[in-house]
Length: 150
Image 1 (cartoon, helix red, strand yellow):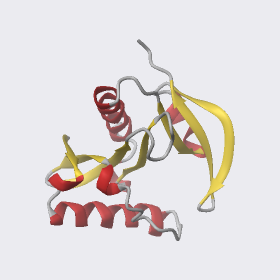
Image 2 (cartoon, rainbow, N blue to C red):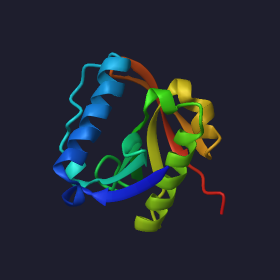
Image 3 (cartoon, one colour):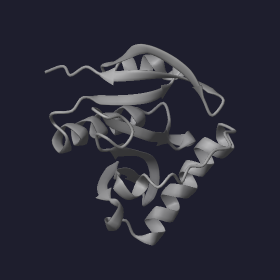
């Protein structure tokens, strides 16, 4: 798998179209969530795009402190194309996202809004629940903070 890390202005129109189509496929169709995916935060995000054979197989975006959380960097819109799951692609993607967060925003901790059923996945990546649980777009979520292993 090859990763491209780009800011919004670096994305080509076809690349952006493929990202938005995949996000819609996963979050709207697969998870049956009707919500406004295009939230204008993409313009300020760092986009992490995982490719295999010229196809996007995984994706995440990083939002600067103050965008979602006042004092935390956020990782969101994390996804892996269905046929590429259970092959450690999500793990590799999140490790890349954590690395980019630390490189770009070293002095800020990382916070995510994680689907609750993925607690084990994120816990194995050193994310710890804050105890705050909520329903977002009809799916149980929890707030989690990355605990650096350094």
